[in-house]
Structures are given as C-alpha cells and as structure tokens.
Length: 307
Length: 142
Ligand SMILES: Cc1ncc(C[n+]2csc(CCOP(=O)(O)OP(=O)(O)O)c2C)c(N)n1
Ligand code: SF4
Ligand SMILES: [Mg+2]
Image 1: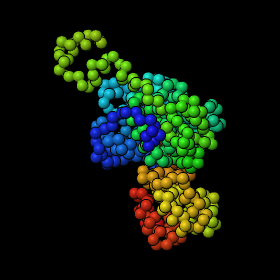
Image 2: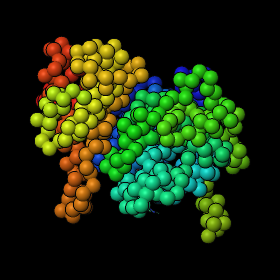
Image 3: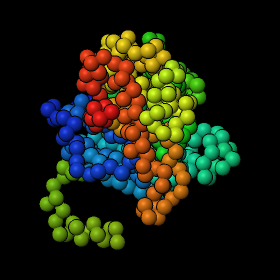
Image 4: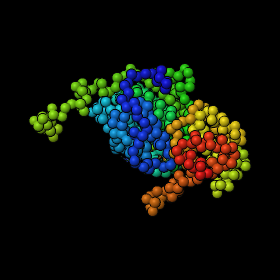
C-alpha cells in the first residue's frame, strides 16, 4: 500500500523533480469570492503536480463552465475551458491525441453530474487515463445559486423556493455502478489531504474520480466549511478498510448526512486504460506522427474523404 | 463561550449579537487550529481560557501547509450575508457580497485583537509566525 492507502499502480511520474508551486503560478487575478473552497482545490492541484514532478507542459487541465471551471485561468499549465458539461469528452480527445500528457478535468457538480452526467457515466465505464476532480459545492454558483444535482432534499434556492423535492445524485455510487476504477473524496478545507487524493488519482492508470466537498461561501449557507468538517471521517483510519473490496466500497460510498467518508473509497488496478484498446493508436500517438508524411496528395485525399 | 470574551469582540465589531460573536470566535479558533502542529496547538491552548482552548481541538497531527488566507477566512465569510440585491452600478454584483471579504478580515482582526490581549509576548509571537500569508499581516494590524 502507498502512503495514501492506495495500491501501487506502476504509473510513471513526471520528470520535473525540482518543481515548486511557483512554476504553476501565473499573473491572472482570481475572481473567486474571498474564502471560496475553490482556492483549496487550486492549491491542492498545484501541490499534487509538484509532488509528482509533473511540469506545466506535461499536464493539461480541461474544465467546463462554472466558478470552479475558472481554475484553468489561474494556473500556468496547458488548459482548455470547454463548453458547460463537456470537458470529459474534450479531455478524452486530448488523451487520445497525446497519451503522454497527464490529463486532468476539473469542473463543478452541475457541470460534472448534471449537464455532463452522460459523459461522466461513459468516462467511468471507458476508463480513459484521466483524473477527474469535481468541485462539488452542491449548488450552481456561477449563475448565482440555483439547486444542483447534488443539493440535498429540502435545500432552498431561487429555483427550489419550497426546498429541493428530489433525492440528490450520489456521485460515488454512480461511478461505482458505472465501473470506475478509482473513486475518492476529499474536502477543500483540508487541501493537504486533497493534494494526496489528487496525486493518487493521477498515479492511477485509468479514470479517477475525486469528488471534492467544496464550500461555496456566497450561495450555499448550509453546506459550509463547518458543516463538512463536522461530518467527514477518513476511511483509511479504519485499519480494515480495503479500497479493493467492492461490497465495502458500495456500503461506504452510500453514506451521506451525519457521516461523510473521505479518502480512497475504491480502487482496482487490473483494468487497462481505454487508450490501450484503440487500434488507431497502435502505430503511436498522433502527436508523434511526422507531419511531412501528409504530403499534398494525401492531404487532398483526406479532404475528399471528409467533405 | 466566556461572556467577557464575547463582549470584548462585540465592542470591536459593532452590531454583532452575542451568538454571532461567539460563533465568530469559534470559527477563528478552528482556522488557527488548522495552521498549527499538535504541540503548538497544545501550548497555545494552555495559554488561553478553556472556553477558547476547546475550539483548538482537532485530530490533525500536523499543520496543513496549504491552508492560506482564503481558506482561513472561508468559515467567516460563510456566516456573512452575501445575498441582498444585485446592483448594476457594481457590474451586476450583489451589494452585500462585494464587501464580504473586507468585512471578514475586519472581524478576524477583532478576534485577533482580543487574543493578543489574552496572550503573553512569546505566545503572541509564536502564533504570528504560524499564520499564513496575509493572515500574519492582519494579526499584526490587530
Ligand atoms: C449549455 C449551457 N447551459 C447552461 C449554462 C449556464 N450555466 C453556466 S455555469 C452553470 C452551472 C454551474 O454550476 P457548477 O457546474 O456546479 O459550477 P459552480 O459554478 O458551482 O462551480 C450554468 C447552468 C451554460 N453556460 N451553458
Ligand atoms: S459564488 Fe461560490 S463557488 Fe463561486 S467563487 Fe463565490 S464562493 Fe466560490
Ligand atoms: Mg456547483
């Protein structure tokens, strides 16, 4: 077992052993509200990359639309802010084009589990080597506070004035049922633990979900730092907890309310990532194929094929 | 919470109810707990009245080095009103959310000032050294 309680995955790490947090800093001033949990996610993501020796040019951070998705603007790294709900689809394309990149998706709960729910299911099932960090603040924050797929029943917002009537999505259970090979949860208020979870997710070969409890200090006055801090407990503090035990993971992932589990809930290392099954990649990654092989004649033939 | 401590905070932050003041003190103590190692936490706790010291309790062994000024003030901002009325002269922002960050640091400084009244010089300096980024500056200003 590694220090995070995860089974070793054999994934190679980056080459930038002398990196510091400053290597990921840029000059863009954040527009997040003071005290927002997204600051914890940003700090933890940078820390995880530094710890793994992954340099800015070796990673690609792909996001959607939302407060949390702005993270791409606030760090020096390859980045792509896509459409609302679509970063997993774009990230899969990025990974297929250049499997050497460490591809990391960061998006909000609305983006990931609502409008992007379809991509979430299929990424979990396909198992591309992508780390998926979801800033789960249980609200649509950017659009000023509507209830989201993870809002608890009874949660009052402008679109649920009488309280949300439906049961929330449990992303961990959905991911487990869909076949995800790495499922973890952490809390933005404990960025050191979050950085460990992100690093373990990046090391994992395959789709890795890290659901982050992320306080939105402006629009969610229920699920606050205090609310989460009072409820979370670390699964790895239970010596008998084995993330490879599906039945135990299912039971643990189902917990919500008075006790909320954090840590690596589930992990299996015996499923090869999606990229390894793609016949078109057998000849090597697209980015490594020489441009000059595409002479004028072949280019014209290619155009005819697609037009 | 000790009534005297609550009263001192209320004197420094106009308009706070005693429950709000007590809660503010609790939030600040919990933020402090996250940036101190266990030994430092225990030493600080011994220098404070038990009602304050109790909020320093956490199971964490070591300080979290990634807790910065934003995460430090987060629990305070959570308690502030941030939804009032959108104002076009503020670019469509909410009139209450815009000053929330400044209000949070003002309240934080008030609690720091009470803490400084309670602590001896060496403890004061130790605490200042452990505070992250801008928080140390706010502490000095308090
Ligand atoms: C296709 C589309 N539908 C709706 C929107 C409006 N919209 C922007 S962000 C957002 C919700 C964001 O919530 P979440 O993903 O949880 O991110 P947060 O702001 O909470 O970090 C919505 C509905 C949009 N930009 N595009
Ligand atoms: S609205 Fe909420 S999620 Fe968005 S930046 Fe502000 S605190 Fe963060
Ligand atoms: Mg959200």
